[in-house]
Amino acid sequence: MLQEYNTQPFKSLRSLHNTITQIQVPMLGFNYTFAHLCLLDDSKSCIVDDILRVLEEMRSARASNRSVPPLHYPITKLKDGREAYIGHQLGGVLAGGGRDGVRSARALQLTYYLQAASPLNEVVAATWELLFCKELENFGKAHPELSLYPFTSSSLQRDFQRTSRVSERPLLFSLAVCLSLAISYIFYEVTNSYDLTCTNLYDFC
Image 1 (spheres, rainbow, N blue to C red):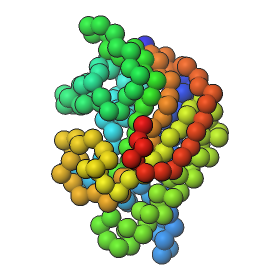
Image 2: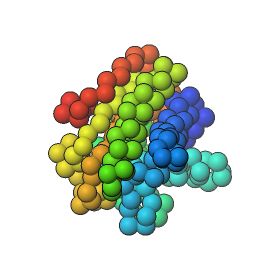
Image 3: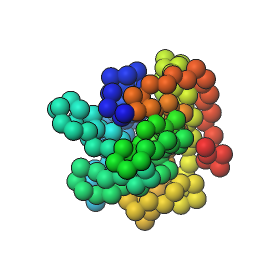
């Protein structure tokens, strides 16, 4: 079940997300991070994939000894009652019947949306993109249990699935990480292969 949050692949996933959001771009005496460059939702918070929210809610429930909500596919429900489409964020899904939810998934896609609100912001975002690719390469070498496939794109409408949260928002930079990650219900199936290619999303997995 997706309840064993201390296994290495799950720890690596959380570590990867933290690594990406903490990438720093020094510019004019200031260190820009994802929080300074991200596309914002209506509440002025960075738009992040719903699958990350779901997994964090499940981790929090487990840590508090509360019942862990099942992860349904392709549409699941968040703690706030909102239904979230995650069909484009999981791959190789093995779903259980009834209330069991997802039993396993072999791939997970994470997408990081950047905006260029000014010429300076655009330069910083472009530098962040380069550091993103380098950081993914380093992270992949340090975590052989993951197969990482980073891609970058400059057009959301052309290259990404349109979602209700971002489909109408202007976007000049968007970044995606497709993790060929063995996420079983115990988040434990180690893969030994590794590949890294920074390329255009025309060849998106």
